[in-house]
Length: 282
Image (cartoon, helix red, strand yellow):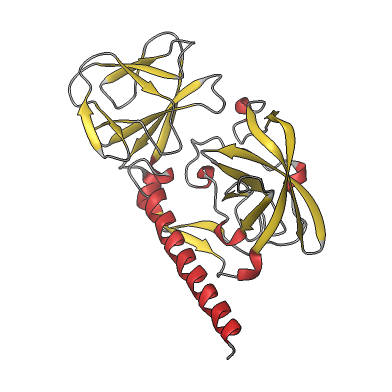
């Protein structure tokens, strides 16, 4: 074995190990107290205070605020920033900001947790999670393809002169038309075919919502997600590691509204990499 071959082998071994750790973390994450499997309801938030199902609280929204207002209706309501895992009692009217990329802030009471979610800041809903969710009980894991370094593909970001707010279609039809922030197109070649993907910005990363030759047959329909880092400063290269393609939240709970792959994000070839489908106990 030559030194270069040895280095290549060591690099692939490290990539495979990192992918395995990512896969394990994914299963822990979707099964957490505010994980995808725990979502049991959502409540649109308007200007009139309304009781929160299963929680001692009422919620409403002032239209000029990026979040919701919560008032406790009894004991046991708590608020936390996820990073610190420090929960503080809510004893009076409290502002709860829009859910951030770090998974904060969160409300909880008993078995229930809630976040203030907005697709594009135009309207809000309170998403309600429960550790007694039937989906959590039925969850048996995530089926995925084996790791394949060939599915780590380099693309090019063709940045727009100005970031675009692009209307998008969603699995919940009433959400269709809400916008996503799209910084440009992603040029990439897959199985000899050229594509110009639309990827949107989310939490400092870009998200590709795509369908491919496995969609609905071997992998989740209507499609899968892939997160990746934007180009380094001054560059235009992006790395799409399809080994980390994952099932969107709506694959774990019917109460999510997920973006649907647009026509330009539909790949003809089968992308046999990443997560395939959710496994359920009989």
